[in-house]
Image 1 (cartoon, one colour):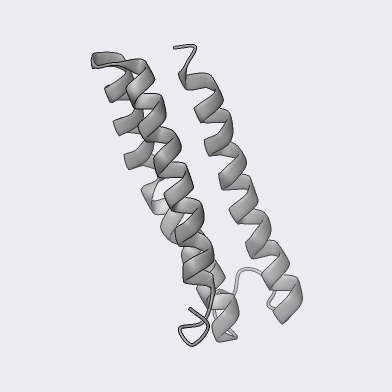
Image 2: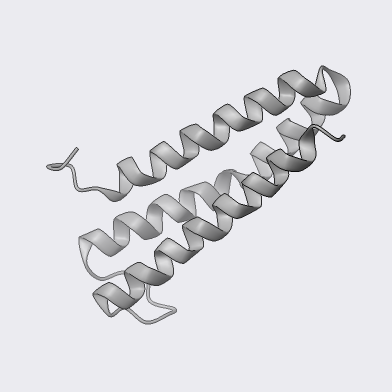
Length: 100
């Protein structure tokens, strides 16, 4: 259980960071809530964040089950790798196709 706590803190920090990126994009492109359409740049940021939110339950259940029934250290390392990949995905998806 102790190995999982820092991973969960990182997980929730990343979730808050992604939400903050959407708030910044709303301000930048002048799109007030609850609207989710507008400029293509805003929609990419919003979809990247929303896609992350959609995968949160899958990540958490898999992470906890792996830590519970298998090796906690290995589960924590896989959890860190997933968070890194999710971070890379967010910024890759947020860029336009021409800039990738």
